[in-house]
Image (cartoon, rainbow, N blue to C red):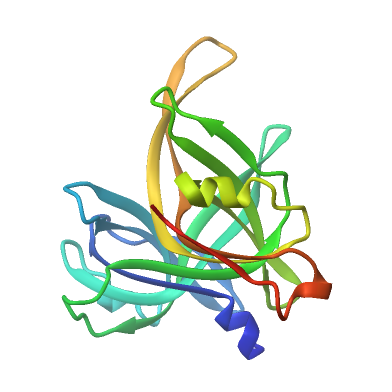
Length: 218
């Protein structure tokens, strides 16, 4: 795998294993398992994040045990009825030694804007902007990663054009929301997204080397 394809999607997590790993799939004869990590925020809240781990590392993912991982935030489309559903998870590439002084949840991605940003105000007049980023991966694949920005970062990226290159630093968060079905029933689902703390936008290829703009979170 080319170095830049490893370097444009880097996730680092420290969390508590809260689900027994269960078999997910097999690729080239190697089994992969899915589990969930409870990752603390600076507040009293936690993010519950899905993690895919290979059978070679499964011994390190014991229930109620803290584990540190380096990996990538990945996506794939799953056909559900007549619609495609974007499935997101963290792919663990290596186990790392835990240092309590480290930030337990950080991700850095470099990709391209692939949908028009959605900018809005909350009922409390706080600015939010949702943006979907395509991040290249090996074998001509891409990961499509939803991101959310607040305040000055939201104002900064709301004018981003489709195809613009963008670099983002943030954290991976989980968020529960309610969805109303055609039957009228309401169910609770969990969304995963990158909460942006720093962003650099390259407006076009002609200015890629000298027109980086930086916005810091408020």
